[in-house]
Image (cartoon, rainbow, N blue to C red; front, side, top):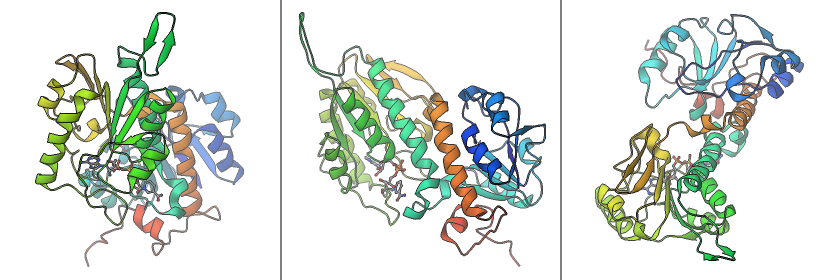
Amino acid sequence: MRIGVPKETAQGERRVALVPEVVAKLVEAGHEVVVERGAGSAASFEDDAYAEAGATFDDGAWDADVVVKVQKPTVEEAGRLRTGAVLIGFLQPLTDREGIDRLAAQGVVAFAMESIPRITRAQSMDALSSQATVGGYKAALIAADRLPRFLPMLTTAAGTVQPAKVLVIGAGVAGLQAIATTRRLGGVVFGFDVRAAVREQIESLGAKFLDLGVQGEETAGGYAAELTPEQQAQQQAELEKRLPDFDAVITTAAIPGRPAPKLIPASAVEAMRPGSVIVDLAAETGGNCELTQPGEEVVREGVTIVGLLNLPSEMPYHASQLYARNVQALLNHLAPEGTLVLDFDDEITAGACVTRKEPAAG
Ligand code: NAD
C-alpha cells in the first residue's frame, strides 16, 4: 500500500501521525511510505530519520491508498484525497458531522481514532488513552510550574516546607496520570470522580479519594453518564466548600461528545487562596471551571487558571511516538496481510469507520 503522511497544518499542532520507527516497520512489511517534507520536524523527527527508515518524499502525501493524520483535514486537504482512499486521524465524528459527511460524499473511507471501541482487543490502537496520558502528565507539570511553592515536603536548614495539596477532578486516563505524576513530585494528592469504580484506582496510586457524596451512573462503555442538574448543583456546592483547602486543582472531567461539565463556579475560585492554580484539561470542550478561557492562561482573584489547549502537542515527541504505534496497530488490523481487507462485521473496523455507519439510503 502507498501510505501518505502529510504535515499537520492545524494551528499549534506539532505532532506527526507516523514516526521513523514505525515507518521502518511499515516499509519492512512491504509498504511504500510517502512523507511530506518537514512533517515531523516540529516533533523533533527530521527528514533524514524518515529517509533512513525508508520513506520517500514527494508532494503526493495526499495521493495515497491510506493517508494518516493527527488532526482532521481542512476542506482543501480533504479535496486532495483519492476517491476510495482510507483516511485515519482524530476526525471528530461527534462534533464535526459536516466534515464526516463531506468525506463520505467524496467516497473516502474514514476511520476516526476516537471511535475505536475501547475493548481489550483494541487497546494497542487506543489513541484517546495514549494522548490523555501525555495530557495528564503535562497538566501535572504545568500545575507544579505555575505554583509559587514546592510540591514536596522539604526539611531544610531554613526550616520545614509543607507539601502542596493537589486535587485531581476526573480520574480517567488523564486524571490518573496527573495523580501519579503529582504524587511522584511529592504533593499530597486527592482524586475525585463520579464513577465509583475509580476510587480503588486513585487509592492504588497513593492518593486519597475525596468524597463529595456525589455518585453518577457509568455507561456500558465505562464512561460517566451526565449528572442530573440536582447532582451537578450538589457537586458544585461541595467543591466550593473543599477547594480553599487545595493549592492546585487539575480538572479532567469529560462526557464524550458533550460540553465539559461545569464543576467550579466563579464563587469557588474566589474562595481559593491567592497563588492557587487551576489547570483545566477540559478547556478543549469548554472547561470544567466557569472562569476558564479556552486557549488562555488568566489570573482571577489571585488564582492562575490555565486553559491551554492540545497539551499532547506540547510534548510532541512522545505523543507522536505513541500515536504512531496506535496508527500502526490499526493499520495492521485493517490490512493484516499487507493489503486492505475491510471486514465491517468486525467490531473494531465497524466501530472506527465513520463514513460507513449509515449507508446511503436506497
Ligand atoms: P473521559 O476523558 O471521557 O473523562 C474523564 C473522566 O471524567 C472520567 O473518568 C469520567 O468519569 C469523569 N467525569 C465525568 N463527569 C464528571 C463529573 N461531573 N465530576 C467528576 N468526574 C467526572 O474519560 P477517559 O479517560 O477517556 O476514560 C474513561 C473510562 O473509559 C476509563 O476509566 C475506562 O473505564 C474506559 N477505558 C477503557 C479502556 C479499555 O478497556 N481499552 C481504555 C481506556 C478507557
